[in-house]
Length: 343
Image (tube, rainbow, N blue to C red; front, side, top):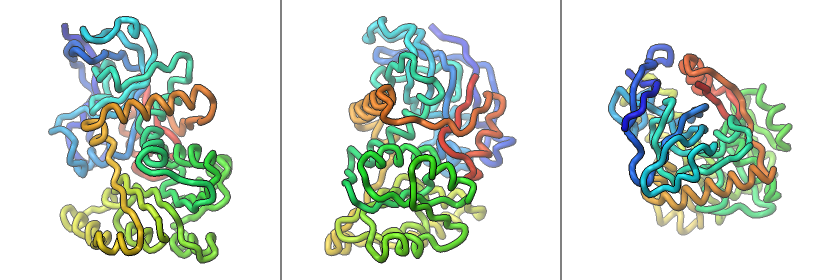
Protein backbone atom coordinates (compact mmCIF):
# COMPACT_ATOMS: atom_id res chain seq x y z
CA UNK A 1 0.00 0.00 0.00
CA UNK A 2 1.36 3.40 -0.96
CA UNK A 3 2.02 6.07 1.66
CA UNK A 4 1.75 9.81 1.12
CA UNK A 5 4.84 11.89 1.81
CA UNK A 6 6.59 15.15 1.04
CA UNK A 7 9.91 15.14 -0.80
CA UNK A 8 12.57 17.66 -1.69
CA UNK A 9 13.58 16.98 -5.28
CA UNK A 10 16.75 18.06 -7.02
CA UNK A 11 15.21 19.37 -10.24
CA UNK A 12 18.27 20.87 -11.91
CA UNK A 13 22.00 21.17 -11.42
CA UNK A 14 23.56 24.41 -10.34
CA UNK A 15 23.13 27.05 -7.67
CA UNK A 16 21.52 25.92 -4.42
CA UNK A 17 18.86 28.64 -4.59
CA UNK A 18 17.25 27.30 -7.75
CA UNK A 19 17.96 23.56 -7.70
CA UNK A 20 15.29 22.19 -5.35
CA UNK A 21 11.53 21.78 -5.29
CA UNK A 22 9.32 20.65 -2.39
CA UNK A 23 6.56 18.36 -3.69
CA UNK A 24 3.78 16.07 -2.49
CA UNK A 25 4.53 12.49 -3.43
CA UNK A 26 4.15 8.88 -2.27
CA UNK A 27 6.25 5.78 -1.66
CA UNK A 28 5.47 2.11 -2.06
CA UNK A 29 5.09 -0.28 0.87
CA UNK A 30 8.42 -1.66 2.14
CA UNK A 31 9.61 -4.84 0.46
CA UNK A 32 10.44 -8.07 2.27
CA UNK A 33 13.63 -6.89 4.03
CA UNK A 34 12.81 -3.20 4.38
CA UNK A 35 11.41 -0.92 7.04
CA UNK A 36 9.45 2.26 6.42
CA UNK A 37 10.52 5.24 8.48
CA UNK A 38 8.60 8.41 9.26
CA UNK A 39 11.44 10.90 9.06
CA UNK A 40 12.02 13.58 11.68
CA UNK A 41 15.44 14.75 10.47
CA UNK A 42 17.80 14.12 7.57
CA UNK A 43 21.45 15.08 7.15
CA UNK A 44 23.60 16.69 4.49
CA UNK A 45 26.85 15.30 3.14
CA UNK A 46 29.31 16.75 0.65
CA UNK A 47 28.25 14.13 -1.88
CA UNK A 48 24.90 15.97 -1.95
CA UNK A 49 26.70 19.13 -3.03
CA UNK A 50 28.60 17.22 -5.69
CA UNK A 51 25.33 15.69 -6.94
CA UNK A 52 23.65 19.10 -7.06
CA UNK A 53 26.53 20.40 -9.15
CA UNK A 54 26.25 17.45 -11.55
CA UNK A 55 29.58 15.98 -10.45
CA UNK A 56 28.44 12.78 -8.71
CA UNK A 57 28.20 9.90 -11.16
CA UNK A 58 26.04 7.72 -8.90
CA UNK A 59 23.29 10.33 -8.59
CA UNK A 60 19.99 9.12 -10.16
CA UNK A 61 18.61 10.96 -13.19
CA UNK A 62 16.84 14.24 -12.39
CA UNK A 63 14.44 14.89 -10.83
CA UNK A 64 16.02 13.00 -7.93
CA UNK A 65 15.68 12.85 -4.17
CA UNK A 66 19.07 13.07 -2.47
CA UNK A 67 19.97 12.03 1.06
CA UNK A 68 21.97 9.24 2.66
CA UNK A 69 20.76 9.21 6.25
CA UNK A 70 17.67 9.84 8.31
CA UNK A 71 16.47 9.65 11.89
CA UNK A 72 12.85 8.83 12.59
CA UNK A 73 10.30 6.27 13.74
CA UNK A 74 9.63 2.92 12.08
CA UNK A 75 5.98 2.84 10.98
CA UNK A 76 5.85 -0.30 8.81
CA UNK A 77 7.95 -3.36 7.97
CA UNK A 78 8.30 -5.89 5.18
CA UNK A 79 7.11 -9.46 5.68
CA UNK A 80 10.57 -10.77 6.63
CA UNK A 81 11.20 -8.11 9.30
CA UNK A 82 10.02 -8.48 12.90
CA UNK A 83 7.18 -6.13 13.84
CA UNK A 84 8.92 -5.52 17.17
CA UNK A 85 10.83 -2.64 15.58
CA UNK A 86 7.63 -0.74 14.72
CA UNK A 87 7.45 2.39 16.87
CA UNK A 88 11.20 2.41 17.54
CA UNK A 89 13.38 5.44 16.88
CA UNK A 90 16.21 4.60 14.50
CA UNK A 91 19.11 6.10 12.61
CA UNK A 92 19.24 4.69 9.11
CA UNK A 93 21.16 4.75 5.86
CA UNK A 94 19.25 5.54 2.69
CA UNK A 95 20.58 4.94 -0.80
CA UNK A 96 19.37 8.34 -1.90
CA UNK A 97 15.78 9.27 -1.00
CA UNK A 98 16.56 10.73 2.42
CA UNK A 99 15.09 14.18 1.69
CA UNK A 100 11.58 12.84 2.32
CA UNK A 101 9.05 12.61 5.16
CA UNK A 102 8.89 8.84 4.63
CA UNK A 103 11.56 6.45 3.35
CA UNK A 104 11.99 2.73 2.82
CA UNK A 105 15.37 1.24 3.55
CA UNK A 106 17.00 -2.09 4.32
CA UNK A 107 16.38 -3.42 7.80
CA UNK A 108 20.09 -4.08 8.31
CA UNK A 109 20.83 -0.46 7.40
CA UNK A 110 19.21 0.96 10.51
CA UNK A 111 19.91 0.81 14.25
CA UNK A 112 17.63 1.61 17.18
CA UNK A 113 18.87 4.70 19.06
CA UNK A 114 16.47 4.56 22.05
CA UNK A 115 16.65 7.94 23.83
CA UNK A 116 19.92 9.10 22.25
CA UNK A 117 19.71 12.65 20.87
CA UNK A 118 18.01 12.38 17.46
CA UNK A 119 19.94 15.20 15.77
CA UNK A 120 23.31 14.01 17.00
CA UNK A 121 22.40 10.50 15.85
CA UNK A 122 22.30 11.75 12.23
CA UNK A 123 26.07 12.16 12.25
CA UNK A 124 26.52 8.55 13.29
CA UNK A 125 25.40 7.23 9.92
CA UNK A 126 27.40 8.55 7.01
CA UNK A 127 30.09 10.56 8.79
CA UNK A 128 30.95 8.42 11.80
CA UNK A 129 30.56 5.18 9.86
CA UNK A 130 32.89 6.54 7.16
CA UNK A 131 35.42 7.55 9.80
CA UNK A 132 35.14 4.22 11.64
CA UNK A 133 35.48 2.24 8.43
CA UNK A 134 38.57 4.20 7.41
CA UNK A 135 40.49 4.18 10.67
CA UNK A 136 39.38 0.89 12.25
CA UNK A 137 38.18 -1.42 9.50
CA UNK A 138 39.96 -0.92 6.19
CA UNK A 139 43.14 0.27 7.90
CA UNK A 140 44.26 1.04 11.44
CA UNK A 141 46.01 3.84 13.26
CA UNK A 142 48.44 3.16 16.07
CA UNK A 143 49.67 5.05 19.11
CA UNK A 144 52.35 7.59 18.30
CA UNK A 145 51.69 7.72 14.55
CA UNK A 146 51.44 11.07 12.76
CA UNK A 147 48.03 11.58 11.17
CA UNK A 148 46.91 14.37 8.84
CA UNK A 149 43.17 15.09 8.64
CA UNK A 150 41.93 17.34 5.84
CA UNK A 151 38.67 19.28 6.35
CA UNK A 152 39.19 18.53 10.01
CA UNK A 153 36.31 20.65 11.33
CA UNK A 154 33.71 19.01 9.08
CA UNK A 155 31.50 16.05 9.89
CA UNK A 156 33.90 13.24 8.96
CA UNK A 157 36.85 15.24 10.28
CA UNK A 158 35.15 15.64 13.66
CA UNK A 159 34.37 11.92 13.75
CA UNK A 160 37.94 10.98 12.85
CA UNK A 161 39.32 13.24 15.57
CA UNK A 162 37.07 11.75 18.25
CA UNK A 163 37.97 8.22 17.23
CA UNK A 164 41.70 8.90 16.87
CA UNK A 165 42.22 10.94 20.03
CA UNK A 166 41.49 7.72 21.92
CA UNK A 167 44.26 5.98 19.98
CA UNK A 168 46.85 8.49 21.27
CA UNK A 169 48.26 9.31 17.86
CA UNK A 170 49.64 12.70 16.81
CA UNK A 171 46.89 14.52 14.92
CA UNK A 172 47.49 17.40 12.51
CA UNK A 173 44.21 19.11 11.61
CA UNK A 174 44.00 21.01 8.32
CA UNK A 175 41.54 23.89 7.94
CA UNK A 176 41.00 26.79 5.54
CA UNK A 177 39.26 29.19 7.91
CA UNK A 178 40.84 30.61 11.06
CA UNK A 179 37.44 30.73 12.78
CA UNK A 180 37.52 26.92 13.05
CA UNK A 181 40.66 26.89 15.20
CA UNK A 182 38.78 27.28 18.48
CA UNK A 183 36.39 24.48 17.51
CA UNK A 184 39.30 22.09 16.95
CA UNK A 185 41.07 23.15 20.12
CA UNK A 186 37.95 22.20 22.07
CA UNK A 187 38.22 18.74 20.50
CA UNK A 188 41.71 18.48 21.98
CA UNK A 189 43.77 19.23 18.86
CA UNK A 190 47.15 20.93 19.36
CA UNK A 191 48.51 20.90 15.80
CA UNK A 192 46.35 22.97 13.44
CA UNK A 193 47.33 24.00 9.91
CA UNK A 194 45.49 26.81 8.07
CA UNK A 195 46.13 26.29 4.36
CA UNK A 196 44.71 29.72 3.53
CA UNK A 197 47.72 31.35 5.19
CA UNK A 198 50.60 29.07 4.21
CA UNK A 199 51.46 25.89 2.33
CA UNK A 200 50.07 23.10 4.47
CA UNK A 201 52.79 20.65 3.43
CA UNK A 202 55.50 22.99 4.72
CA UNK A 203 53.58 23.42 7.97
CA UNK A 204 53.21 19.67 8.43
CA UNK A 205 56.97 19.17 8.04
CA UNK A 206 57.59 21.98 10.53
CA UNK A 207 55.23 20.41 13.07
CA UNK A 208 56.75 16.92 12.72
CA UNK A 209 60.28 18.40 12.73
CA UNK A 210 61.04 16.79 9.39
CA UNK A 211 59.50 13.42 10.13
CA UNK A 212 57.26 11.89 7.47
CA UNK A 213 53.61 11.27 8.36
CA UNK A 214 52.03 7.83 8.67
CA UNK A 215 48.54 8.42 7.34
CA UNK A 216 46.43 11.07 5.64
CA UNK A 217 42.64 11.14 5.52
CA UNK A 218 41.89 13.17 2.42
CA UNK A 219 38.43 14.13 1.00
CA UNK A 220 39.91 16.85 -1.23
CA UNK A 221 42.09 15.05 -3.84
CA UNK A 222 43.32 17.13 -6.79
CA UNK A 223 46.54 18.98 -6.02
CA UNK A 224 46.56 17.73 -2.41
CA UNK A 225 47.10 14.15 -3.60
CA UNK A 226 50.68 14.79 -4.77
CA UNK A 227 51.52 16.77 -1.66
CA UNK A 228 50.21 14.07 0.64
CA UNK A 229 52.06 11.38 -1.29
CA UNK A 230 55.34 13.23 -0.71
CA UNK A 231 54.53 13.70 2.98
CA UNK A 232 54.06 9.94 3.54
CA UNK A 233 56.89 7.87 4.94
CA UNK A 234 57.52 4.14 4.62
CA UNK A 235 54.43 2.25 5.70
CA UNK A 236 52.34 5.35 5.06
CA UNK A 237 48.70 5.20 4.00
CA UNK A 238 46.80 7.81 1.98
CA UNK A 239 43.06 7.32 2.42
CA UNK A 240 41.17 9.16 -0.31
CA UNK A 241 37.43 9.52 0.31
CA UNK A 242 36.31 12.48 -1.77
CA UNK A 243 37.17 15.01 -4.46
CA UNK A 244 35.94 18.34 -3.10
CA UNK A 245 38.63 20.27 -4.99
CA UNK A 246 36.79 19.37 -8.20
CA UNK A 247 33.58 21.07 -6.96
CA UNK A 248 35.34 24.42 -7.09
CA UNK A 249 35.83 24.17 -10.85
CA UNK A 250 33.75 26.50 -13.03
CA UNK A 251 34.89 25.39 -16.47
CA UNK A 252 33.18 22.02 -16.98
CA UNK A 253 35.33 19.36 -18.60
CA UNK A 254 38.41 21.61 -18.44
CA UNK A 255 38.13 21.81 -14.65
CA UNK A 256 37.79 18.03 -14.52
CA UNK A 257 40.87 17.54 -16.68
CA UNK A 258 42.84 19.95 -14.50
CA UNK A 259 41.65 18.10 -11.40
CA UNK A 260 42.89 14.78 -12.82
CA UNK A 261 46.14 16.32 -14.07
CA UNK A 262 46.88 17.77 -10.64
CA UNK A 263 46.61 14.29 -9.11
CA UNK A 264 49.26 12.92 -11.45
CA UNK A 265 50.06 9.27 -12.08
CA UNK A 266 50.82 6.84 -9.28
CA UNK A 267 52.70 3.72 -10.37
CA UNK A 268 52.06 0.55 -8.33
CA UNK A 269 55.75 -0.45 -8.52
CA UNK A 270 56.72 2.87 -6.91
CA UNK A 271 54.22 2.31 -4.12
CA UNK A 272 55.70 -1.13 -3.51
CA UNK A 273 59.29 0.11 -3.51
CA UNK A 274 58.45 2.92 -1.09
CA UNK A 275 56.09 0.75 0.99
CA UNK A 276 53.21 3.17 0.69
CA UNK A 277 49.47 2.58 0.19
CA UNK A 278 46.67 4.51 -1.46
CA UNK A 279 43.20 3.47 -0.33
CA UNK A 280 40.03 4.68 -2.05
CA UNK A 281 36.83 4.80 0.01
CA UNK A 282 33.33 5.15 -1.41
CA UNK A 283 30.77 4.15 1.22
CA UNK A 284 27.99 3.91 -1.37
CA UNK A 285 29.93 1.07 -3.03
CA UNK A 286 30.49 -0.59 0.34
CA UNK A 287 26.75 -0.35 1.05
CA UNK A 288 25.90 -1.89 -2.32
CA UNK A 289 28.43 -4.71 -2.23
CA UNK A 290 29.06 -5.33 1.48
CA UNK A 291 25.91 -4.35 3.43
CA UNK A 292 26.99 -6.44 6.42
CA UNK A 293 30.17 -4.36 6.73
CA UNK A 294 28.11 -1.17 6.71
CA UNK A 295 25.74 -2.63 9.31
CA UNK A 296 28.68 -3.68 11.50
CA UNK A 297 30.19 -0.19 11.40
CA UNK A 298 26.87 1.53 12.12
CA UNK A 299 26.17 -0.72 15.10
CA UNK A 300 29.66 -0.03 16.46
CA UNK A 301 29.41 3.76 16.31
CA UNK A 302 25.89 3.79 17.80
CA UNK A 303 27.17 1.58 20.60
CA UNK A 304 30.07 3.93 21.30
CA UNK A 305 27.81 6.97 21.22
CA UNK A 306 25.42 5.41 23.75
CA UNK A 307 28.42 4.62 25.98
CA UNK A 308 29.59 8.24 25.76
CA UNK A 309 32.85 7.34 24.02
CA UNK A 310 32.07 9.63 21.07
CA UNK A 311 30.01 12.82 21.02
CA UNK A 312 28.60 13.85 17.63
CA UNK A 313 28.54 17.60 17.05
CA UNK A 314 25.60 19.35 15.41
CA UNK A 315 27.04 22.38 13.66
CA UNK A 316 23.89 23.87 12.13
CA UNK A 317 20.16 23.22 11.96
CA UNK A 318 17.69 24.11 9.21
CA UNK A 319 14.04 23.45 8.42
CA UNK A 320 13.13 21.55 5.26
CA UNK A 321 12.10 24.75 3.46
CA UNK A 322 15.62 26.08 4.08
CA UNK A 323 17.30 23.31 2.09
CA UNK A 324 18.99 25.81 -0.24
CA UNK A 325 20.55 27.68 2.67
CA UNK A 326 21.73 24.40 4.20
CA UNK A 327 23.39 23.39 0.93
CA UNK A 328 25.00 26.79 0.53
CA UNK A 329 26.51 26.59 4.01
CA UNK A 330 27.98 23.14 3.42
CA UNK A 331 29.38 24.16 0.03
CA UNK A 332 30.93 27.33 1.50
CA UNK A 333 33.36 25.31 3.61
CA UNK A 334 32.41 27.36 6.69
CA UNK A 335 30.36 24.69 8.45
CA UNK A 336 31.51 22.55 11.35
CA UNK A 337 30.12 19.24 12.56
CA UNK A 338 26.84 17.88 11.19
CA UNK A 339 24.27 19.91 9.25
CA UNK A 340 20.77 18.77 10.27
CA UNK A 341 17.56 19.42 8.34
CA UNK A 342 14.25 18.86 10.14
CA UNK A 343 10.71 18.44 8.83
